[in-house]
Length: 197
Image (cartoon, rainbow, N blue to C red):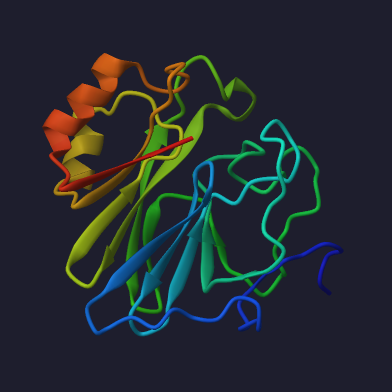
């Protein structure tokens, strides 16, 4: 049974057609905040960190989205659709949801969940769990850090090399401080850096 208000589905929806990409192309679609959808040329789609509508962010989640799987970095309402705080999630039961470290294959994507730690001092209510996601597709390695704090040597080793890095950067240095961001950039040397959060 589909929960009331579910908007994310594995089925194609007319308002959200698949992108037309050339072989080998990948598209990164910014939904908002830390939520992105990655599209492969063959049609596979991965959604990362859907947020709860009108909680802290002040805006709504899109009406309809289609994806082959959802990746959640940690149980905060701006990353897990509000599930941890008891909200009805915006996805149907048919959508696979990955939360934990490990290796997965979804469509054309090879996905590695890498154990991290939520930035201090937040996330104590769930043990500061944060799974960083590394997606391999069309010869690219795309990393989404979630709300991870400074990276350990082990995390850097597991993530490296990175072609495209989605990293929490904001003017208030809410998750990472400027010097921490620069240290991650120097260590991973991504070709493309996409700020989020």
